[in-house]
Amino acid sequence: MTTKPRILIAGAGIGGLTAALALARRGFTVDVFEQAPELMEFGAGIQVSANGTRVLIALGLEEAMKRVVCEAALKEVRLWNTGQTWKLFDLGKDSVERFGAPYWFVHRGDIHRVLLEGARQSGNVHIHTGKRCTGLKQDGTKVTLEFADGGTATGDALIGADGVHSTVRSCLFEAGKPEYLGIICWRGLVKEADLPAEMRRPVGTNWVGPGGHVITYPLRRGELMNWVGFGEREDWKVESWTEKGTHEECAKDFPHWNPLVHELISKLDQPYKWAMVGRAPMKAWTKGRVTMLGDACHPTLPFLAQGANMALEDGLVLARCLDANTDPAVALERFEALRLDRTTKIVNGSAETGRRFHNPTLADPAQAIAYVDREWQPEKVRLRYDWLFEYDATKVPV
Ligand SMILES: Cc1cc2nc3c(=O)[nH]c(=O)nc-3n(C[C@H](O)[C@H](O)[C@H](O)COP(=O)(O)OP(=O)(O)OC[C@H]3O[C@@H](n4cnc5c(N)ncnc54)[C@H](O)[C@@H]3O)c2cc1C
Image (cartoon, rainbow, N blue to C red; front, side):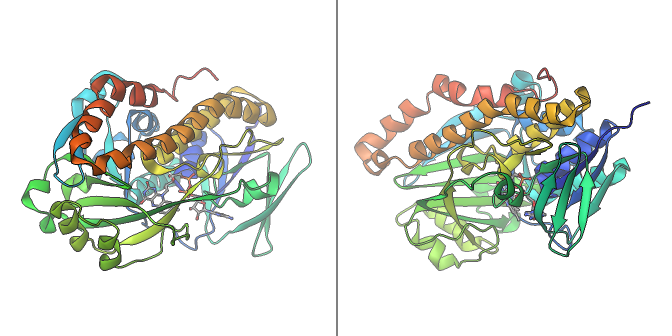
């Protein structure tokens, strides 16, 4: 019997844990090294579309996820000032009928915890916290990861799943130049009890306006509402998930928006602010026995809500490639070849979606309605989204 390669993973985010669990399910022993001293709930909402839920279901996590998600009926588009509403697409059973898997709204902390428990229960995943990776070495047969505390770990292959500011990426490639887009993102949560009555519905909403957009959707079976607002502003350049702001500053970025939007801002538990940064897609992200996945190699703007979905897809496809090839270097090359075009198209499509949401035409009452009618026609919506949701990471030939 041949022994499976020992796999090292840097980063215990959604992508790192998905890869770890998918590998463990295939009999690999995996060591995951996470810089945080402990793994705890953080972040706000994430939309997991059929291409992502299919991965979670394949990993045996459907029941655990169903206990924490919100499965909404539909998504809609609303005009920033009048609140006029259009249907974007159906969710619920329509997602299952059309794409073979559900569409879930979930708190990032909840999906993270479900993946973490799955990885721990698998018995084959060892998670090491407080281990900040600072460097790596490889010699054609082994890879050694170096840590800030002076320690090292050696394995047969390394997956850099260490997020947008990836150390693995900077060890292997020149860092892509971040381009500040002049867009600030505000996010926060509203408790169900604080919601205006008309917002207590299982619906996701994209409010679109000139120079800004606002996304809302329910989380945790409706106990919370996720609120994310994007405004155009040149003076904020901190790319962080943990930077706090104030309600007043947030409200100022949405002048003359619908009173419902402002009511939600006033009820946010804690507004966080985050600068939107664009990065050109990488042309390669594998060298020898080291590859990357998720935000480490294809960071994206959140406008198609695909960052976490791509990380889920990556994790499963990478595990399947390692399982199908005895030489890890060949497996990693195959993984990159399978994922490059799709992830590049998503990164570019996300930027284009932002321009559609923020179009200046929306400022003109005489043109705004015709603009939404034209841009969100059902046929155009299908062209923009179906190819995302149809992708099946469980079946892509590896
Ligand atoms: C704290 C946090 C909050 C987020 N909140 C949201 C949100 O509200 N909504 C949303 O849509 N997306 C959010 N995201 C982003 C979303 O989770 C990711 O875009 C997506 O899931 C891709 O996942 P990833 O695993 O590639 O990267 P990440 O989720 O960023 O995970 C990377 C992991 O690597 C660890 N790490 C980084 N550097 C090192 C190092 N040198 N050594 C060891 N470990 C390292 C990080 O601590 C992190 O745990 C958040 C990400 C983070 C980290």
